[in-house]
Amino acid sequence: MSEDLWHAHVEDYLAALRRGDRFGAMAHVRELQNRGNDVLDIIHHLLAPAQLRVGELWVADAWSVAQEHAATAISEAVLTMLAVERERETRPSKDAPSVVVSCVEQEWHALPALMLTEHLRTDGFAVSYLGANASAQGLVRHIHDTGPSAVLLSCSLAGFLPLARRQIEAVRESGTPVVVGGSAFDPEGHRARVLGATAFARSADGVGDLLRTLPSAVPPAAPLTHPGAEEAYVVFSDRESLADDVERLTLQALAIQTPDTPRVTHAHGWVRVLDDQLPHLVGSVAGALVSDDPTIVTDAVSWAEVVLRHRGAPANTGPTLRTSMREALQGLPVATRLLPAAEPV
Image (cartoon, rainbow, N blue to C red; front, top):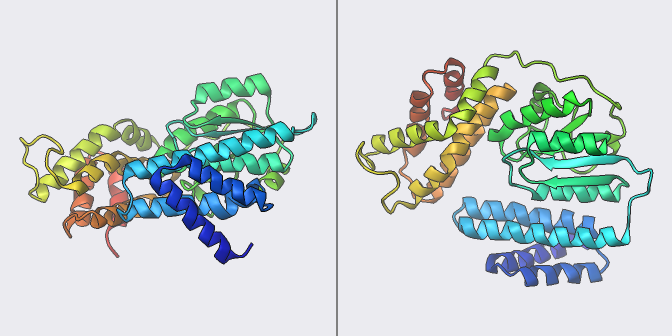
């Protein structure tokens, strides 16, 4: 099928997602199946591009957060249904290599991990899919129960990289190789290497070949010794309180809130979005510290500025936000030094 035809199908599928129409979305996928498209075709050309557009529509304030969440849930349900149907028809061979696919703890973006699972099943792997928000303890217990040849961890938000590091440590303590991937990682694999992953997967394509090159066992992860590694967990554990401080300082500086005004009691829509996103923005500092990559903060602040601008925030919100973050983190020297990298170029 041509790219133009796939683009039209994506738009039709998005229309169903916009309506929250699960049956309409599934009917569209059935039509594509009837035309000879398999699950990987549907993932590559429909579900993945549609999910990218859903995120762009939310950033541009064309869709509400409720629409974004509903759309994601529909695509997850569609892919799960396709996976269950295919599993009934095609079982892995008895000697198929066994792997575990899981999201990092507190990571609820499960669709990329679901897509990866179907790639691996197509490539002949027996996959245990643990889903979103899998704890380190539960993951290790599953490893001891099933003895997989590798664990694949998906992380979409860079603010959860401190938790990714803890899960990498836990998996490697069992001697099991661990592969990481997702939008929380940079394309060059620097963050994955610093965090101690055995390997990094840039995309689902070729992951099977990568898995076949892994050693059968690995040693424990080496300690993190770079500046800021310890501060990362201070910031991460206190990110909600730090986010409150950053919001208070930002709104006071913009003369929208006084010290005695309760949080987010006025009608500014961008303030509600700021309130929702600030823990992730502060978490990006923790992600930058643990992975030794200050560009995480640069990217997170730039992204936040775009989101807030689309929602009518004052023109000086970005610089004010940077100043507030520096003030809130002033007791943490390495974290504070990251913030000048977020200044406008």
